[in-house]
Structures are given as structure tokens and as C-alpha cells.
Image (cartoon, rainbow, N blue to C red; front, top):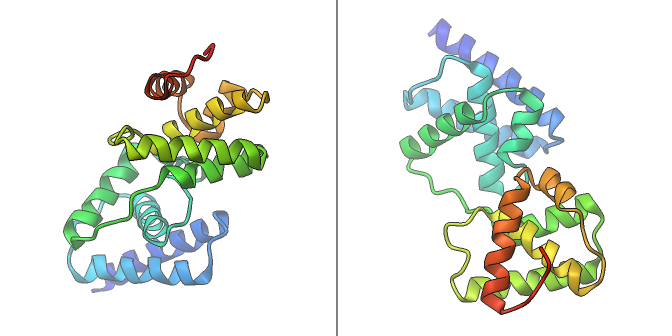
Length: 196
């Protein structure tokens, strides 16, 4: 029992650290602590690293609450391996039979727009493009941030304010190749001609 209490205390301290670094609300911290307690109560297998556990718990709570902190954001702050956090996140979801909301492409567009200070006009065209593609079931199985970045890149052409693929890739935490591939697919869908 003492060992369990000690582990819980350590994970809670790491949750507090991440809460401050990610500037999360006290409400989200409480949700994360409750999830941690549930994991202990239900005897869900714990990983060796309390840091990884805390990171996975925070990621799960962010997704559940619709907070736009990606796995890459958490990796950047913690220095932990992305695969390790993702693996424990899946263990949490599978064992608790929870269904987490899917990160929407529109959230990605909003996130990139804010970080890159892209104009509302470009953002509006990008969202129209995303909506067009979604209606034709063209984005199923595609990484949301890839589609979001590509839609903004193409939208910038319409407004004659071309955006740097490199900067887009850095902000979206994806490769320039991914952006180019998603662009080509979207261009093919809407029969446009861009010099990519």
C-alpha cells in the first residue's frame, strides 16, 4: 500500500509539473489526478517510468477535454520518447474502455493560423477546402495536421500570400514531404493547378 501511495504521489507531482509547463487549468489537473487514481484502483499495468505515465495521462486528459496540446508538445517539454507515451496512452484507453474524441482538422487549422499569425481570409479559404474534402470522404485515415497544413498552404495561393512549407512543417510537427503529398491529393480532388 505504501508503494502504491508513493507511486501515486510521484505521478501527481509530475502531473503538476506538466500542468504548469503546458499552462493547463486547475480543473484539468484535477481530472488528470482522478484518472491517475482510477488507473491505480483498477490495477491497470503501470509502466516503469512515472514521467511517461504522467505524460500519457496529461495527453489523455487534453484529448478528452478538447485542449489542443499535441503529443509532440508533450514530447518537447518532457524529452520523453513519443512512442513510449503513445503506447501507455493506448493502454489507458483500452483498459478503461474510453473513447477519446478525434483531433479535428479544423482545430489544426486554427492552431497553425494562431501560431503563424495567418490572416483570417486565408484561414476561411482553408476551412472551406477542408469542408469540401471531408464531404467527399477524402480525409479519412489522413493525419489531421497534415491536411490542415496543406489546406492553409493552398489557401495562401488564392490570397497571393504564399506560406513557407518549412515553417508550416515546423509549426505542425510534420514533414514538408507530408505537406506536399496532402497538397497534391487536395489539388487532384478539386482540379486546381498549383506549382507545388
